[in-house]
Amino acid sequence: MIPLDEIRRARERLGDDVVRTPLVQLDENVWLKLENLQPIGAFKIRGALSALRAASRDELAYGVVTASVGNMAQGVAWAAREAGVRARIVAPADASRAKLDAVERLGGEIVPVTYDEWWQAMVDRGYDGLDGLFIHPSDDPAVMAGNGTIGLELCEQLDAFDTVIVPWGGGGLAIGIASAVKALRPNVRVVAAEPETGAPLAASFAAGHQVDVDFTPSFVDGAGGPMLLPGVWEQTHGLIDEAVAVPLDDVAEAMRVLASRARVVTEGAGALALAAARGRGGRIVCVISGGNIDAAIYARVLAGETPR
Image 1 (tube, rainbow, N blue to C red):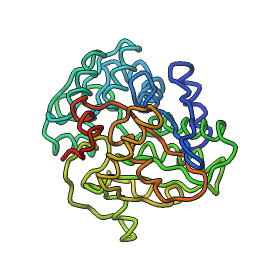
Image 2 (cartoon, rainbow, N blue to C red):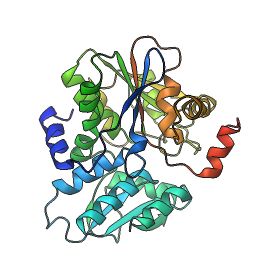
Image 3 (cartoon, rainbow, N blue to C red):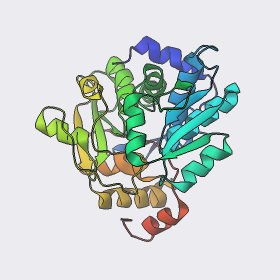
């Protein structure tokens, strides 16, 4: 758990450079926290900026490095440009071109690698040959504290809610939000949503211990994976109440609902929470984590297809 005081300090570090995103009501019992409206189109700017501003000038002397399929890469590139330091991004060579183009527009340097090398960079917390402060995309206290500012906002924006559903990729978003929400409203349930094509947290919850799973990459490229990162399973205890594996068809349908009923453009990971809200009672907050998606893929989804 990230201490509430650390999350509040992260909010002070962020200042007015991140958007206090709106919480809008979709229907009788569902609200949407629209992190797709951040300057980079995703929540990752909170954690990246929090971590970079928590670092000393000496730590930043050789710039910063991260491993990301796109949104954290944009957050780190944005924060590094603001600080005037170099940003290098270890990313799978086949990552979303829209996201990688955005990273380069922000001044980030892409280091293309295989998927396995990218995953290993997160496990190793660095990549051979790249000097600089490694900002982990999820498992970093300052990053999670920045993410936790979303939880502070939720509790200020809505008097009462029963459940908050959060997309799960590396876990830093859900752990950060849960740390704030559980501190302020202990009875709120926190649910993590993963794509069924790679849902190690849901499988671990079902087994009662950490397990690895088969993984198939999908258009939900900001969430899911073959395994939990080291140490993450232990951090979920007391914070995450449930983890669900969401079928890709349900994710695509949630994207269409967000477009048609809320006029919200979202990527696959951003729609996971709404897809997981289906059939649930009580007052539910769905975290819409980002809206960065290739136009061609989005067009296929809007046309009624589930991209494979």
